[in-house]
Length: 431
Figure 1 (cartoon, rainbow, N blue to C red):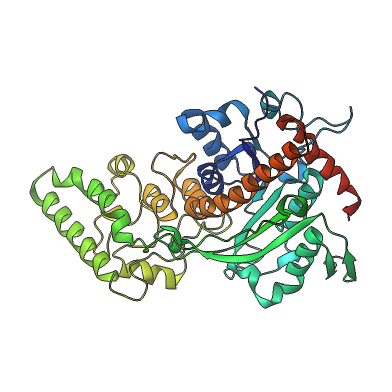
Figure 2: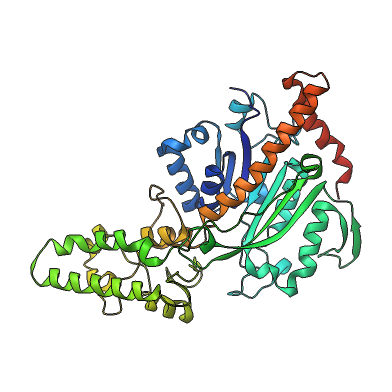
């Protein structure tokens, strides 16, 4: 199989458990590589791609690379360096070339900019903005999409944001290492601003603002305009999102009869009452931001005191994450997981619903590892909305270029090499 003008390809770094990958896939992108350092998250990606029918393209052509993105090699270099993209060559018929990729995406680690952390920014060893800029320089994709927490929009990071923008599109900025103000030539992109998108505006039952940067290569964008997605409809409450799964969790105990059934009915009724009551409040019954938790500090947890209080108003106990029904029965943790006076704890599956994952997406590892994957994810519906906006521009650009080529007398297939030629023309913009 060879490359098609109708296929939009992508490479995603820091892919996690697939939140952004799912959204971009729904928007029409086909992944050539998903790079993730966490072994459990990489296994989640591998297992879902292997088992889900809608991921058959990626099953054939996508490399899930479990490792440090700093060591990721997307392009071959002569005889001295082999590319990590093995499956992609089956689709392309050869190694990926510079300027050929349509989208480079990444949800780079958020702790350097999170309000919940020390906000060390560029001084945090987990800051991977430099790496995604290096990859943008090396690959010269048609578009770049970077997701992070809202905190990166804080005033204290304005200088660093300006530097990132200057690296992409050119302009004056202070180099974060040397502290010297430089006039960067840029990599040939037009930055379409940093937009803060609220997940609840896109059908996710959670207050989860995320900062997204989109940049499109100037030669691709041309006279076109990138339009940020707008809210898709009325917010979805936790009650609406979880009512069926809550009923399913209590159902086995309701079927037992006796005292346990009476207690199950009482607890389910109380949760429904609290969750529905929350729909009338300021937040419309929408969940607070899920957090992934730190590997250094404890296990799965729904967040700090304020978040736990918000969950309590939704009828949920937020001090931990519940076992699945099978595990709860095996470990005899029903009282802890489901029958607390303060309400049930969420299962990993329910947390995934709150994050906007499709119901058929399964997570690898133990309960804590699974919950961290869910809590650290970019909600798929938000990624899908941004991905579709990018895809609309790229498809319009491809159609525009095809028409120009045809009007100039070239055959449709002869327009493709121009992509690589334009990328080579940008080589001089390397900083």
